Length: 257
Image (cartoon, rainbow, N blue to C red; front, side):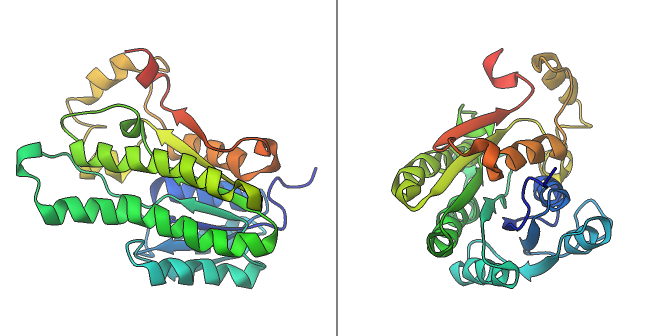
């Protein structure tokens, strides 16, 4: 059977680590060539850089492009790098930052940084990819939101604001780009075991993990591969009639509390 993403090229922001890394590997195993667009080449979890791992373990090609998603020129360069593989077919706006906060203490710089990475990066990543996809006859854009984009939490006010914005940007751009054959969808991960949830905001491995586990019907935290599998579906022709949609990947957490 032909690979699900044969002859496709994907640009994945934040693909050096975590969900982005797992998504890059899932796509590559299904035939897609990969542009790893990240501010760092080395995985936060250690090991071989993603673009090298793709080339060592799959038949796909891959390249690394240094990319700060708050810089529009970097995003354009990342999309341009996919020309080596025939032009971008799939754009995954995955890069993001996460932190807890005391609402009253949030500074303007902290607010701007989170919106620059989590929202501006998605907006202009979508814009850059869509410009090329129009020439290519269409494509799939996948935005990483969060269950925090569906529910408010006082511990993560700014983060919730950014992820809610990503959700609405997804719906609006799906409307704007549908006539060009471009689908735009959002993934809303819950508690996924990455450096974001073990170091940036320590939940997994902390005292609060047990309380979280009691609220998750699946009985476990998610793995980056759980997110990658949904991204693979949205990138492939299996989701050809799916656009302006949100898919929640949280083990049942947000609908059963």
